Length: 268
Image (tube, rainbow, N blue to C red; front, top):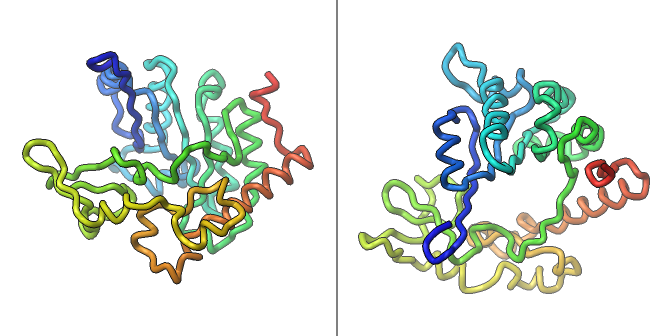
């Protein structure tokens, strides 16, 4: 709890490899209990992507630290993002055996295709793999429809990220070296915003001819503000989310109709 009885909480995205007991106890002290941690496939594939010292098994270190978070923290919120490719998808369920059953109900699994491989195979079947995690006791919704009233955290007025040089950005998914900042941090702690910020925040992400005429508008907040800034309106179809929403809804209804996916957490 902060001053004036304002509740404070925070979350981080981390590879999980450098967590220690000391760090986790500091998390507990400041009520940091929400984490997104990524595995790039099973042990074989993860260790090809994530490198430590020559003798380190980064996969085992990461999994061990996930379990340690659950042991030390009170009611931790663990989102285990598993990056998959057409090559590693068939072996991803091996991860299940590396996490003891008593921890699984406290971990939400999110299967996410590595975007560089999406053109290789756009019809990968996730249901069997996702069901393996469900059957093993994990929280594993195949698709989630957000109930947020905004598209991205970068669209929020009071959100910002500050680099070591004092440059202020809204979007964290860009190269800060080659990306023009939205503003600069002043010596007194205030931010001097520039025209990029004001152009971003002067209109909502749906204020364009395509979104306002779309039948899915009530279920979508349009592209993120960063993509809108970077994209010519003539190329709007390249950043439009409609096909993804349609695919998600189609898959959800198909699975509901055929009873392929059962939310077993709700049945227990």
